[in-house]
Length: 141
Image (tube, rainbow, N blue to C red; front, top):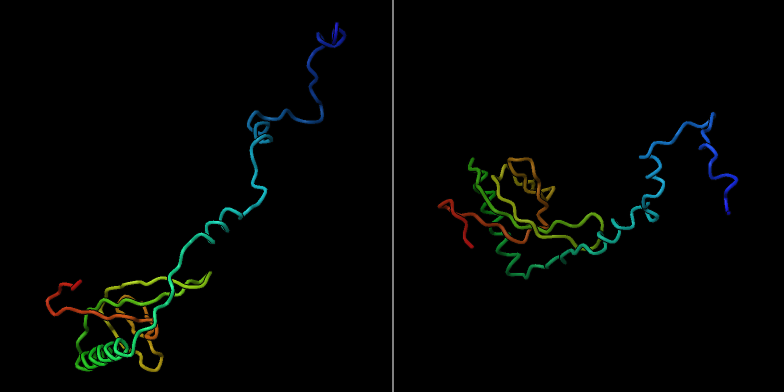
């Protein structure tokens, strides 16, 4: 019969190499990532961004009036609570997203073209498309 000469021999145990654990033996057969980072690259490519909207002349004029009013209030020592909608460019690809933040205006930095909020955020004026506030404490929709 086939293998009759070796079938009853004792199992060989190496004197130089330690026995491999079952965990390590199983790891030999586990799948591996042949293309490391490929899945992340696919997710990044599929992620959608928005395009920047250019304000009309009337929209820009209204925004400038609101910025002037904010600076007037700050000059009087008032700290207005506002909701600012602005475009935040994406760091990795073309486009970005529109973000609305609420907060108390601490300072308008005219020369740097930024609005500083009390929580430390600074918003570039050229990215702002809307500034809202409400005297009653309720936001209009």
